[in-house]
Amino acid sequence: MRTAQDFILEIPVLKPGDPITKARQILRDDRFREVYVADAKRNLLGYIDLTDGLRVTATKSNITIEGFVKEAPMVHPADPIEAAARAMRSYRTDSAAVVDPEPRIAGGVLLADLFPVIISRHELHGTVETRMSRDVVVVEPDDGIAKVYARIVESGFSAFPVMKKRRLAGIISRRDLIGSRRVRSVVAENAKTPVESIMNTDVVTIAPGEPVSAAAELLVRHDVSRLPVLDGNRLVGIIDRHDVLASLG
Image (cartoon, rainbow, N blue to C red; front, side, top):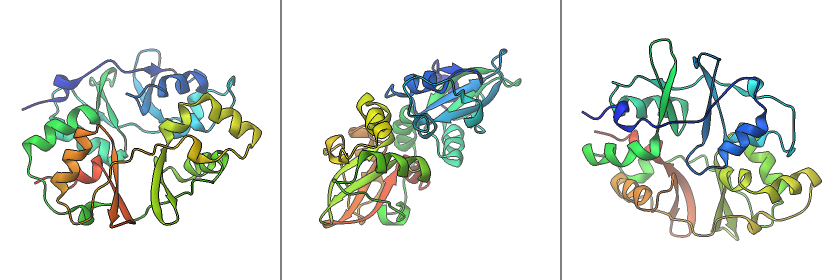
């Protein structure tokens, strides 16, 4: 049985009084969508995520992370990786803190690392359309970056498909927004720069009638966290790693 200990890695840990700008610097790293927060003894207090990092647009700010901390998913080193994945699913996170009984942070596990192993060991049931989310918020290529930025912060969604004349043209994610210094200046100045200037146009998709196992294979092969679901050219949903894991046999 593979356990959290087998996949534990060192994760960034901040204190409540650290500035939000420090968290944002960490969140620009492709590996981390959450940053964990602990007291001086490394006792887990919670986490902040990419959306929290987007809430403050100033390059320099004295705002601390204390007001953004949320309850965090946590597992113990001996917990099976399936338990870690369930904890992440319940919190809709891409990581979980690994703690001792105090609970002091010993490290963390990432869903991206556990996912390929879990799906290789379990039968996946159902089709994409039975597991996908149908509540998909979309934006258009000429929507301003500032508008999309505000919508992501307000909605809590991690990404929006970009639709042009009812066809999928790209996708814009929190990662795209937080990783660009240009975005912060555009937002601060309320400039009209369109989202198509930073969106990702290389989008992997899947059809609703495909088996969930096919979605899992694409997620692993392309190392992406979600797939837009297209019925022909019509966007009908989106499926992510958590949705796939919900279909475990």
